[in-house]
Amino acid sequence: MREELLSIIERNSRIDLKELAVILGVEEIDVVNELSALEKEGIICGYHTLIDWDKTSLEKVTALIEVRVTPQRGQGFDKIAERIYKYPEVRTVYLISGGYDLLVTLEEKSLKEISNFVSDKLSTLESVLSTATHFILKRYKDHGTILDKKHEDEREVITP
Amino acid sequence: MKYPLSDKVVTLKPSGIRKFFDIVSEMKDAISLGVGEPDFETPWHIRDEGIYALEKGRTFYTSNSGLKELRQEIANYQKRTQNIDYDPMSEIIVTVGGSEAIDIGLRALINPGDEVIIPQPSYVSYEPCAILADATPVIINLKAENEFRLTAQELREAITDKTKILILPYPNNPTGAIMEQKDLEEISEVIIEKNLLVMSDEIYSALTYKGNHVSIASLPGMKERTILINGFSKAYAMTGWRLGYACAPVEIIEQMTKIHQYAIMCAPTTSQYAAVEALRKGDNDVEEMRKAYNQRRRFLINAFKEMNLECFEPYGAFYVFPCIKEFGMTSEEFATRFLEEQKVAAVPGNAFGESGEGFLRISYAYSLDNLKEAISRLKQFVTKLREEQKQKTAL
Image: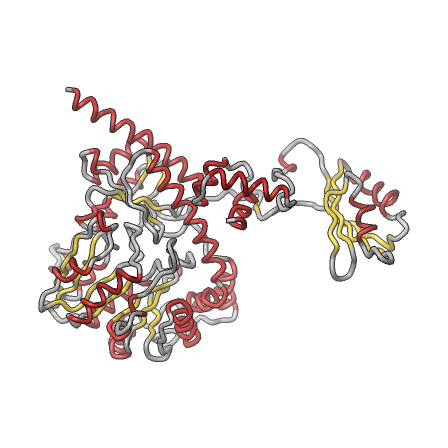
């Protein structure tokens, strides 16, 4: 039940426990226990909401920054990754295979704030060799959800 | 002018579903639970293969019985799911949906006056196809107390010396019933003893929720007596691609191929290329869809329990078949009032045969949110009907 439960709440974390139990075909208490186990084991790390900020009046700019770094002896990339992810404005940090090492996403109110972060904080870190910043212009699909498409049922209303 | 039409066709009853469809179509904001096809779109990688085939200019006829590589994949699929060996070169034909396979299968076997046993409630086209092939349909009215499975006893009682074919429609549309191994073993004894053929319509075989589907053709001595029909519509959400197939002994496939070759030529080429991809790489998609259907199935069964609506637990396809006899109306009256008062469309059970009277087919090929809304309306409707009944008895 574990994976099925996870894939349901990954798409809808607000589903109520009773309904979750019904559609999984188990008792409600089992769902409660499994959820708390998953939280304890750090498998469930949070219950976030997918928001299309572009539809609000709030200005937000998101940048993807490719970072090339020198790994440190004994610690590889972990130490430098930690230095970067500790900044609260940093949203994600991934270690990446290929042409660069870390992919950092950053969310700020303006282009200027992002450029300040890159030039003042990120580039000045000792082990950072270079950065390349890309700005997100439009979000079509996020977390597996198409943001702008309304689903219409194309089917005939009654079929045998 | 009076056209000299075929008596056989003119006297054929139009589908009971059609009648209801016309009422629903006029109602703009109705929620439908009446659809017999998946709500999922065809998985993208399968569509992509179809597009790719068009791009590459694969726009020609294929051989009559279908692309060789598709027949090979069908043979592999039957081997890995049912452990049945079919020769892709001589024992498989690719058809325009499972429906065509039903039609040409019956036409290839029937001589006038032969009897075809059709268990009902079941899909609407068996009886008309049998009639068009000059067979005499013999209906078995399946019983709710057997969860709409076919029993050996019922089969025995329907057999005469003219019986030629049994149609075996499981997992079943509209009831959601399945036949498990032991059920099949019991009827296969009768089939062998009475020397019958079986047309096993397994179009919903990938959608079962209590163990894996068992094909009757996989039982000892049954492959040589079975026309196995399957297709891509339900499992891979490919209804509009119109692609199915039949597996049967070479002697039968040869005759079916003749009809197919003159009437159809070959199944759509684009669809056949897409279907190769579906069989090669589609197992995960099917499993994801099956899980989603199963969640909805459990939701509905639980909802019926909560509103005390009688319904056996079905383990196949994407239908539930609740009983509405307690309200003292026909299925059509119930469905019509439900539509008029709550704007929810469900198909009256009698559209699938007389023994469906007193039942309603509810499809769960809809999102959970959709089903939730429909069920809350059903609850209101059922509560109202029960109050009406109380008042009547009080008078």
